[in-house]
Length: 613
Image 1 (cartoon, rainbow, N blue to C red):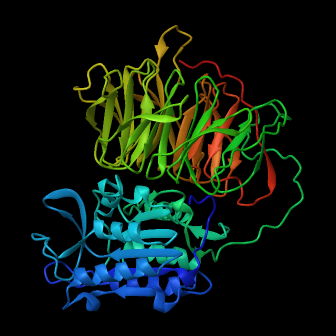
Image 2 (cartoon, rainbow, N blue to C red; image 1 turned 90 degrees about the vertical axis):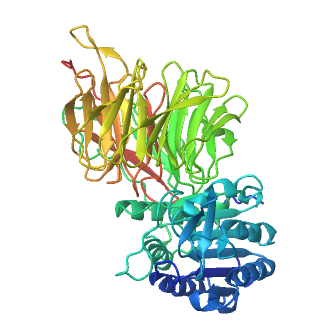
Image 3 (cartoon, one colour; image 1 turned 180 degrees about the vertical axis):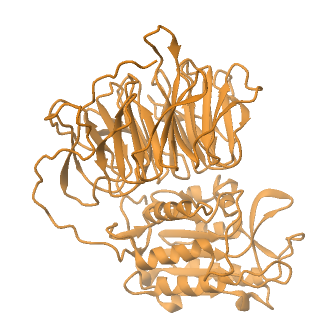
């Protein structure tokens, strides 16, 4: 079984086991956990949402686990639920998560009598839940963990013979492997579960009919990130991201509308030629990639739709033969841009794919995922030639050097790894890039510079010929840096070669840096929300940016005003220019969540400005 569309399991054949510990003998109490159990049970039982019968939901709270062999009680309950479930099996845990002192990769879920210094029979190792999933005959299996270090469930214990071989499995965790979960004593429930219950109970306005796990993860990630709370992690297998736990109360039936006449896009600079437009024609759905043509007249272009999966990352091959899209279901899809037909689907990642990058010769593709790995794929065969495993957090960005001999990767562990791909077994040099996650890496046109940007809001520039030397630090942003893009090499009117780097930030600005003197060349300020993406066109004469304000803008190099290309229904996480610079690929969601075609009109590429240098 491999799911291809959202499905809500039949509640009559489903079971849920909700485990939560609020009071401990030797660990600090977590009073909010009791609210977690009660609120989640109420939502699962709501007939408008799912309608799980009360007798099909086993709740193991502190009282149920105190004064007994708690491990045996949990094991027996999991075994009974797994045997009875034929449709859905949901396992939830909230409490203290601990790492085995003798094996730091093993996640243990605490019980009332847990002693953090002696794990013998006093905890529930995650392997117990794994075995329950594997042995159950349920068709759809979901695990939700709200505890510190819960992201460890996506690591070793889910590889090998774990969830990887269990059809239709999905694991959602409150944190990454090295992060602590958040519980505010003054609030009802813990931070993660309180927002999860709210999302399931109230829905997503104008969202999909069913709240499948990929949609839930995507929305939770947005909400938690916006509140500077720990970000969740998701692992899916065989379409497990399509498993739904509730109907969406915010769903609205789409109403057909008459085609709209072409109109000029707002914010178009008056000096750009009038009467010239670009067109986007697509079936608008969550997860769509919109192809934006930069042409002298409106031209229709088909769109590529990977279903309900959110497109996190896209890249065009250097020769223009294909583009690659990484999405929340852990798959990478390689697409023929001429026909918008799939050339290959690359399975192997166990979580959302946040980064994709083609090698300069277009023969290989590097991908980075929440599963903490980087994979390098042979495009011709569609196989992974190597998996790089040194990161300890989600991989946010990958970039090839211009000669293709090195690869940079960065992620939530706060480290930039510079891989030597010429070695038989690739080796890496670790570069410390400030404090907190690193969201972006980019090589300069000649490959002698490597830039990184992350949570601390600083841009760091290394000399790749001497990585032992401290990087230059570019300051100016007041919030995390989300994206970086180097301008292609060019000469100024004085004949001197120059390097320019663009950085996009949560402070709602894009800064263009002169790398020659490490100064800010100019700043773009028209976005009204955090800017997620910035990318130069191949000829270096235009910039495309995407923001949480739900717009994609196109800027002429040197100009401070950009035209709005796309107004989407949600934040846009990925944008890429085609190899010839004539098209822009926009990943994430479309202009409106509706199954009907809609035309959006914008502006042509502006003329090349003069006087830069």
